[in-house]
Image: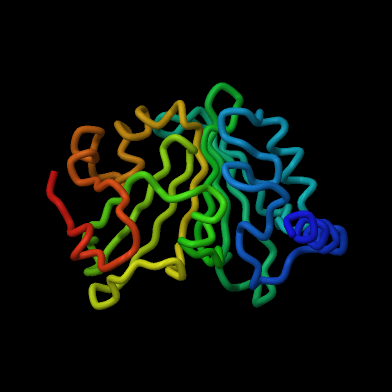
Length: 222
């Protein structure tokens, strides 16, 4: 089955960009924590750019290298995917790459990634940890982390829609170098910029399966 899926992926890529309804996982020729041959902690910046330039699904005009450090990273690269709607609209699916020592350290996708919690678990296994906290806009932000695999994913929801299940759609997927996990914790990457390592670990829960967020993972204060 996986070979058949890969065959159709390669066939579509050869013909052009993928339709908008394809998930970010469908847009890859490898499984997490790899994405189209890009693996955090292994792929060099040069290899990254070669891969991006070879993907017809990516709008080549949008690839931007900042050549500036940010937070713990030395450099950043941003890009958008082709979209089948008005050029006046903002891109609905974007990619962000963060570099340390000329090597990919984190690769993130945010927007309409058409991917569910169950899709991620199918490829990488169940998350190890989850953070569930109310946000500034009156909703709930949920962050799920698999430190040993170097994968995290997140979404926001309304306070009257707190059930998390395999069909729950996520809005961001991040692939990171597992060796950077502790440093990223301290840099507040797993708490939307709110908490350092000690504080994050206090609000974090071990993953205990699907259910109601308020019943299984109610918000905590550090």
